[in-house]
Image 1 (cartoon, one colour):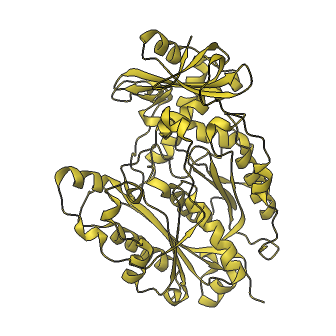
Image 2: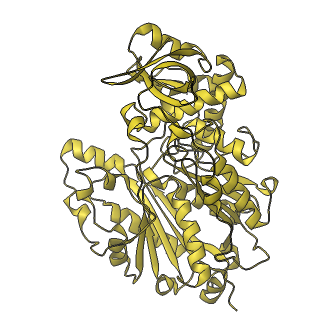
Image 3: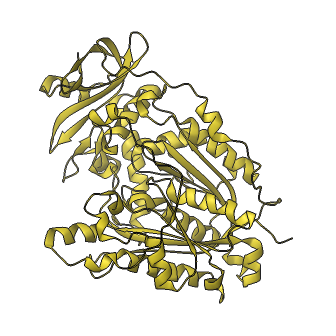
Length: 503
């Protein structure tokens, strides 16, 4: 019987800095895909690829921009590379790259696919400039007519109530988690800023040494939390350097197969990296319904399941790439996995989304490429990649290794992790709250250098969660950016423009 254990045999990534509108997204994906296929060292790899999956790109989600791209980027990629393959994609979310790896690991192990090419990327820096200058990008749409298989079902990323109060934008929602973390850890404002500055500084050291990083710049802890030199607040307490960079030009490709097929293709053993453990799971979907705002039961469960499948422990991991769109995402994940944010092993292989770059949904593909390359180079035997979509909502985890596990890959025998997560009781949410309420999380979003609006989550006296904005008065906004307000009471009332919280 052929060895059905899933492996990665080819990887590639590229960053372009020239903002050249003649290079389409399909051009970029074709370049890295050809490089990843070549990285396998297998002469017959093209005929072995019967499955092509593409990570959904941001432009496809924006009205008016989706018309600039092929209907099926994967099909256009197949045409460009001369591949005959079934095409797949998925719904938006930063979890998507690892989700695709996990899905196709099972599909490969079951024999439904023989060779899989996963590619993704963004040319958002080029596209943004082209839209401003009027550069011709009409050729970006060419090719790709066949309908892809779309994995999963689409769900609104947040509730209508959350969206009405500013929580659709991740730049507002992740700082809410941050305020809850600060309170749970018992940090003073000074202690909290030291944690944030230290995290950014350590990640920036990795980015500074990464030739693919968009910002190859090292930050001191003090500079990271300072608002000097254009590093203004976006939503408190996050300065600009703590927010993911979307306007980047980057792409990746991964080639997967089974250990048995890799051997048949003649792939050199030192090129093969084993996917030892996987897990996927969602936290309670709407942030406002989560009883605890600084924890992720789904990451904890996914990490435990992936490590169990791998037959390894967190102490066995030499390398980590933790999803890092905002500092709270890193801190919550580290707590769930059981490592410190300043673990000497580090939490990023790239430099993170805020410095390396946040190419839409595709960031974690870069983490996977780095993981494969570092394991091949002997920087460790095992490593973990975590990927997160929406607002600490959708999670996928992979455990990678230079060494094969002892057992065949389990197909259809793992416990239903999502059913266990769905059993966690969600909080009822008051749509039009009126009365006294206690703050559980808060932030202030900025316009320029000035706080403009507060967002508050809290609990009414009857136990229901409320979502509200504050007024724009300077006194209220100053309290939001200067005090630790979790546990402070105030009054909540509905209004024509939404729920309002006041002290």
